[in-house]
Amino acid sequence: MIKEFKAFISRGSVVDLAVGVIIGSAFTSIVKSLVSYMINPLIGLFVGGINFSDWVFKINDATFKVGSFINAVINFIIIAFVIFLMVKLINKFRKTETKEPTNTEKYLKDIRDMMKKNDEY
Image (cartoon, rainbow, N blue to C red; front, side, top):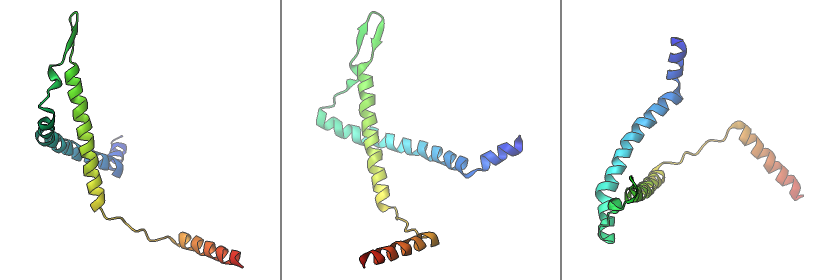
């Protein structure tokens, strides 16, 4: 059983997943800071510092914090948009790999070209 666990944990996909989760949590804190300390105050300048968190309604003893939910939805949209922009920027600078065609692909291309040549006559 220990050998199986060692084989499982040594797989590249498990290690990649662990690294992805760790980097993802670090990236989350960066994005939250960006949104909380830079973007939200900027938006507050344009909307007059509206704070929805005080919006509540009550039915008997139940309190529904609608404003907090609205704030969470707005923050989610802002965070999602910031992540979209960051990924787009990263992809812009990432080198695109040009893959060398395999022998099979070269052979099939030659066959295609020969068939096109035969169709012309």
